[in-house]
Image 1 (tube, rainbow, N blue to C red):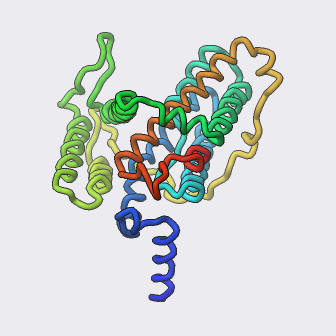
Image 2: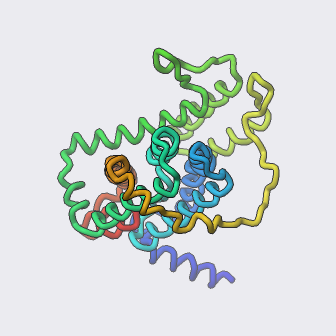
Length: 303
């Protein structure tokens, strides 16, 4: 058993260049769990947003999980990069609230718009043009993209945690008399303190501590912050009726209306995904490997 374990350990190390990148397999396992804890919110938020378009929330949970699993595996196998992929928070809002709810476009037509924008995105990624465009970004633009992505993620966390409350005159600080806001504030300081102390898995520890504490902290209306699931285990089922649920006839019929939004999906995905990948790889020190840029065609194609 020891030899088998060592063999698996060695295979993982060689395949994913763990030691070469200054890491260890144990550290990568902890980092993977931390990444999962940080991005698991998408399994709840994305279905809730897509439900605004009349789509079944449970179906959207399964498709969100499937997209995240497949995307992350593609990035690992094709590009050998420790980057997790999941549905984008910008595209789903436009899809549900603008395209379907406000414009009145049927979901199959909207799916077709996303498909066409995605195909164009893949073709651009398979060519050398995406890499040339990225390398052509001036340094201030690259830094601006990094800051914008960080600010967007911070905005989601602060609004979700009640630290920032939207009002008629903009955002205001959340009410400190709300125990949930106090818990979120404490979690923010805890994560920062563990970061400064260089505690291994500090971010993961912060997520676990806040999740457990949320079981005992209540909102002013009496509901607990952390809701335990009704069932801990459920056999997954994939909504097969959503496979290839496209309407090309409806797309062509409303071509003048849907084409600009399709272009938006393409451009939004390009800058959102590209900026995120640039920020993540730079922060992780994965900018160059073997004299070649890490963000090559393999990474862009997987993305």
